[in-house]
Length: 255
Image (cartoon, rainbow, N blue to C red; front, top):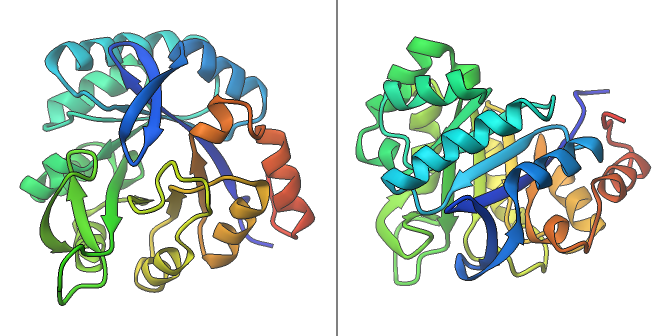
């Protein structure tokens, strides 16, 4: 039996509050991040991910304060992303209590950031966040990388980007389907399978969870971990229900 499938709640933080919408729009308040993190930790979450969705200067300071308060409260690994552009940014968040760092836009703009962070702290610290979708216009790529909450794309091939990032030192891939994000109709299984086929790093599936069986489907498609936000924040599902569904389907989980 392989490693346990990790169940990870994602907290999108804006101005010190957790928010959630559909396709990164129409955000609504979902609560205090430290309180939610503690609740999820007590409920059996394997890790917790914080994403600073505003990534302003004020937001980054707020995020450091949030990470520090959370690290003093919970005892599961914390991943933090949003507005991270340098080794110094990573160092400050690790000092605040983060265990892993997620990079996205800054790594696209300067891929060498990936190797700089991996060289400084080890590739187990670095998670590459990929917001991918099927192209809106005729394209030679199957999936394109988007930025700015899925609103912008330069036509970058998501598959090629994942392979390049792993070669540069990314230790894990957080794959978020922008087509499925917040819709709750299920993970993008085809995308998960395609990325799994070319990525030898652990793969976190994100975007689209609506029922416990959706998490099982993602694990069957090749995900090493499953991440969700709305279904946990608004009480549709609990961490325990997801783990029970995974265990009933034959996947190892941490109890």
